[in-house]
Amino acid sequence: MSAALDVFSLLAIGAGVFFFVAGTVALVRFPDSLSRLHALTKADNLGLGLVVIGLLPRAGSPLAALKLVVLWALVQVSSATVAQLIGGALRRRDAET
Amino acid sequence: MTDALLVAAGAILLTVAVGLVRVLYGPREVDRMMAVQLLGTGGVAALLLAAAATEVAGVENVALGLALLSSFASVAFVVASPRADRR
Amino acid sequence: MTVFDALDLAIAALVLGVAAWTIAAREMFSAVVGYVAYGLLLAIVWVRLYAPDVALTEAAIGGGVTGVLLVVASKRLGRLPQPEAGPGLGLKLAAAGLAALVAGLIAAALLYLPDPAPSLAPEADRHLAQTGLGNAVTAVLIAYRSFDTMLEKVVLVLAVVGVWSVAPDRFWGGRPAPLGPASPDPALVFLARVLAPVGLVIGVQIFWVGADEPGGAFQGGAILAAMAMIVMMARLMRPPRIGSRRLRLALIAGPAVFLVVGLAGPLIAGSFFAYPAGFAKPLILFIEAFMVLSIAATLPLLVAGPPNGEGEP
Image (cartoon, rainbow over all chains, first blue to last red; front, side, top):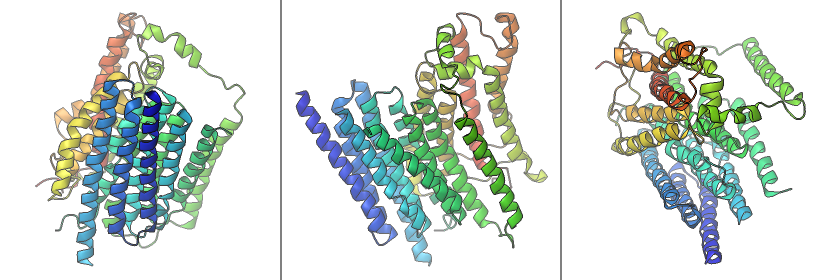
């Protein structure tokens, strides 16, 4: 059972790492700010989400697991909001120039 | 398993660090800010992995604090930028 | 070379690179962003050095408070009319020389440490039971060297006085300029409404567990301060009038309570800044609670700046 859980953890964390790589590549390679923003927010949220899912079976107690989920939710809320704010600011500025 | 978690933490940290070239090259201020945002999220993930691997007490609280505050600089950036007042 | 060594080398190179970029950056805003990134990396470095208490401080201060402070300051400076000429070469060289001197002295002190380095850690650990605390860092801060910690809190109050002192006389006692735009983005208001209550709980929890685990008054207070800042940025709250009696009480509550307990030491425990045996932990938490309040009040005021007339409707 624990071997199966380990494999699950590794797969989820590996997928998380992949999304961080994807997000970084997009941030470095995409041509303009709005597409970079688009790629970034998807990538870092999915990446962190998958890492958290991978770590859940390893959490020592239900409370520790809850903490992981709360932490992920916090990043979700603030990262999504910041993306919205930055996107809005970009659009307003582009409209003015 | 412990080593695998640490390798994953290192991989994420170094990956998002590559994104810091956006802090260098911009070209816009927003691009610089986005690289820091990615570093914040990546740092949280790396800390969580390191906490699970090393079991040092309190590391998950550091990750929690970072998760809570990682977007603050970006929020301040949008809020304080000129023209934010005019719609 | 183990995984740890490789990771440490990579992080160290990264921190140095970002630090060099921050110094070399020509535009102010690039340097500010570099500095925020540097702070985030430092938090990770402290974790690797097994100092989660310091890492928590760095995350709360570097990630939250100074990030906002510097970004807001650089944007406010950018709006002011730019002076014709920047600082002259002589001034730049003097600043560089002083900075290099400080860095050099610290490096020299590190290099000339005897091996093994002198440490009071075993001593601090041995007397931990007498304080009733489980976290040696908190014991050092509030018990072993409590006088220093009290003075550090006084320094914070002095910093606020310094900021206020540049306010023009006619605005004295008024409100600092609002942190956010007149019509904030609804998404920002949503974020502030969601984040602030959660952050309040996390901040108080980090203060409370600080007695026995990594955490403490400063870390908790800094998180609360960051929450106050986001609420002000979303315009859900205005910066308080600096003449307000309640605000001033909150500012001095921490050092004042600390000082009173310290001065009562000779009566209750036999010497200044001593705690009565068996009653140390409740007393320490009592002092810390007021320190949390003072820190949470001080840091947002440093970000808000002096009252300049923009704060009044």
